Each structure stands twice: as structure tokens, then as C-alpha cells.
Length: 239
Ligand SMILES: Nc1ncnc2c1ncn2[C@@H]1O[C@H](COP(=O)(O)OP(=O)(O)O)[C@@H](O)[C@H]1O
Ligand SMILES: [Mg+2]
Image (cartoon, rainbow, N blue to C red):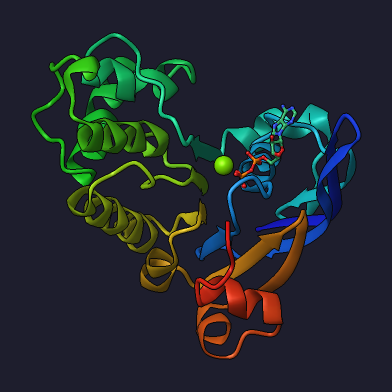
């Protein structure tokens, strides 16, 4: 579905990503792992066209993405940020946002918002003000906002890092459901190793700006191809 070739990114003279080569397959849950500050968010932002790479190519459905095509591609993807932004309005309006800006008609908006809220377990919350939601509810609401226009690709940046275990479990259930019911391709940045075991199909490990290993979850956890991956997965790496 998505491929990046020799992708690099520098901020000033600091090289954050070094020649990343990565392929994302349709319908998979791909976990992007690595210590904090390693470039996970930067890579997701590049995939979502919020950041321009310093060098390299990006291909979507086999075609190279020039900046002028980015709007077509962007319509098919959605990103959930590490720190969710809530609009000071109702839950309904917060979730409807992506449909309103895409010019969807009112009736369809109503139907899709209700479907998305059902999927994240927030049926009946439409009229509540977003700012009065609990942390877990707020995160599920922004999840509904991210999926309301049925994206093909969902980019999740540490979606559970600030949540309690009950809400972590709920978010993981939502991720599994979106994948199985809608076939959505999901890339999730996380340093939560048990979470990767629970939800990922394949795993990529980022270290010092390099993607040191990309493998199936089974392989990464039982027989990693890189000693540094092994150390990271066993929790021996200090970060
Ligand atoms: N806009 C920016 N300007 C300068 N440095 C940045 C910018 N965005 C990220 N960085 C730096 O890039 C590195 C990687 O950051 P980030 O992608 O957020 O890592 P991670 O998500 O893995 O914790 C960090 O050292 C961070 O300070
Ligand atoms: Mg980050």
C-alpha cells in the first residue's frame, strides 16, 4: 500500500531519520517501535504529509507521491496525534469535523458520526461538551474523529501512552475491530512491548534514526535478526 525509499530527514544539522526503507502492506497492523526521541512521530508526520522529507521517495499504491498529489492521497489517510486536540464544542461536532471539511451532506454526516461513536463505545455522548470528557473518553472521541471518513490508512502516534489499563484495552479492541471490519491498514508508533504482542502483525524497530529491523511479530519476539532488537524487546535497553 505504501512504500518509502531511502527516506531521510534532518532538522538543521541533526539527522533524525537516515535512509529509511519501509513497505506497509494493505490491511496489516504495523508497529513502529523505538525509544523516545528516535523519530517515530517524525516518520508518521512525513507519511501524513505534515513534514517534508529531506531526501527519498514515497510511493502510495505503487505510484510516487509528488507534493501536488498529496491531497488525493491525504483524503485516504488519517492520523491520531500523541496529544489529542479537542475543539471546545460538542462531541458530535468534534467527530463530524473531517466530514464537514470534505463537504459531506448533513444526513450522511449524522449517520457516520453515530456509527463512529458506536464503534468507539461512545453512543449517546453526541451532545456532551468534549472538554468535559474523561481522558479515556476524549481519546476514544478523537479516534472516532480519525475514522469517521473511513480512511484506508490510519496512523496512530502512541495512542494509549497516557491512558489507564481499562482504556488501553478499549483502544486496542477498537484497533482490532477497525482492522477486521473495515480492512483499514494501521501504522502504530508505540514503545509498549506487550501492546505490540497483542495487536501487531509486523514490527519495525527504529534506533538512532535507522530502521534496524523489520520483521513479523513472531520473528521479532522469538528470533530477532539484530542483537539491538533483542535487547530492546527484552527491555534491556535503557531509554
Ligand atoms: N520540528 C522540529 N524541529 C527540530 N527538531 C525536531 C522537530 N521535530 C522533531 N525534532 C527532533 O527530532 C527527534 C525525533 O523526534 P520524534 O520524531 O518526536 O521522536 P519520537 O516520536 O520517536 O519520540 C527529537 O530529537 C526531536 O527533538
Ligand atoms: Mg513521538
